[in-house]
Every structure is written in structure tokens, then in C-alpha cells.
Picture 1: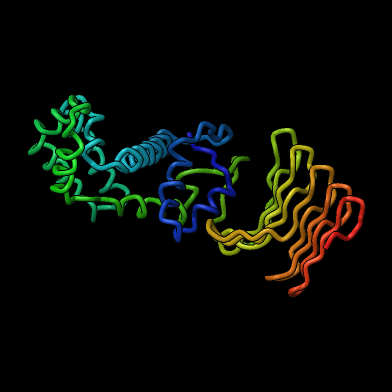
Picture 2: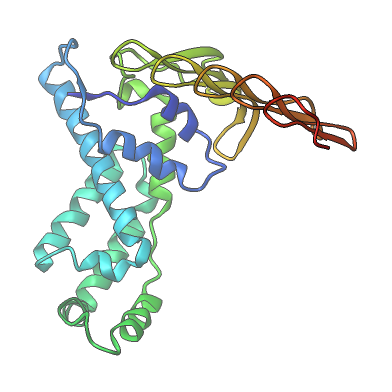
Length: 278
């Protein structure tokens, strides 16, 4: 059972300059609800893919739930045995999937839970108490065994060898070092977007289309953070905006009449009938 993921999102989340992207990349696999059905796997291959999916699911839920602190994360476990089983499994995965460096912190986290089990359970059962937040934060301050590098280690494995974890929407392999352009389509075959990839990173022109296949926006994108609109179009296909350079631009009404133009420091405006108003 090999998860299918969105290829554009794979390349977008491969940019780790956004600190959330290792988690976003792992989430693609953890929350995939489509799987490749035309690949025959041996029992051993099925087992390893199942483990990789389970690892991604565990890491995503762990990180997501722990964003408000590790103590609230522990509330998710009914009994000590559940916590012990959870961390024993993560430690086994650490040995199997090359994040052994995190094992000491995984063990420390389990030890922390056992040492503070009574207080953690009391906090979990009395979340309406007036001093709950202060007590939780005091206990949180005692916890210093974070294993957050696990996310990035596994995310880097996904980027390096995506075939070990997933396929694209069509069930094809994803080239992590691809340079070129891709097109993405809606399920009805209408073109949804075109985008550029350079060495496995989103970089270059990105064109969005509406549900009828008409152009809506042309941008220049660099990873997650940088997106600059170059052109946009009204829903009727008329051009709406065009960037000329860093300071100069033009806007149009949906009837094709220019609305505003800025060239250097000169700004001109027109009404919908073409009469200049400034």
C-alpha cells in the first residue's frame, strides 16, 4: 500500500527554509487517502511500507499535539502501558529508519512521564481548575528531552528517496532533483495550474487557472515564502493587472479599459468609459 501525494506540494514542502515544512511533508504521507493500486508488493515490501506510513502518522500526531507542550500530548494516553508501548515502538523505528541519535531523548521522555505520571494524570483530569495553566507550565519547564530533530531526519529521507514512501497523483515516481515544468489538472481534465521546478524546488513562473480553464494569475514563486504576482485576469478573460517592473504597473477594468497606470512617479487613472480622471 503506497500512498499517493500531490507532486506540487512535495516540491513546495521540500523547501525547509520554512520550519513547518518537514511536518507538512510528513503530513502528506500520514494523511493520504489514496494509494497506488497497480504495483504488486511482496509481503516484505508491504510490511516496510506499512511501517513507514505508521511512522509518519506517529510523528505528525506527536508534533501536532505537542505544539501546545508535551504535557497535553501525554493526556492522549489512557494508561502508562500505552505511553510505554508508544515510545518502545518509536525507539524500534529509530533503529530501523536511521534516527538513532534521538533514542536518548525518546528514553528520557518516557522516564519523564513515569516520574511525573501522577501529576500528569491529575492535570489531565482537572483542566478546568483555575491554577491548571500555571501547574502545567511548571511541569512543562521540567521537560527537556525534546526529539524534534526526528521530523527533519525523516523528512530528509522522504526527499532523498521519495519512492520509499510515496508516489505522485498518477502513481508515478517523483524525481526529487527534477528541473522543468509540470501541469496539474482537475479531475475533469481542466488545467488547474502550471509550475516550474529547479533541482526539486519550486522556482519560476506559476500560472493558476479557474474551473473553466481560463488564466487567472501568473506569479513568480520561490519556495513557500516568495510569491510575486506578474499578471492577473478577470473571470471573463480580460487582463486585470500587469507588473512592468519593481515600481511600475497597470490595472484594467473587466471591460478591457485601463483603470490605472504607474510609470516612474507618474500615476494616471481612467473611469470605465475611458475618460481620464487623474
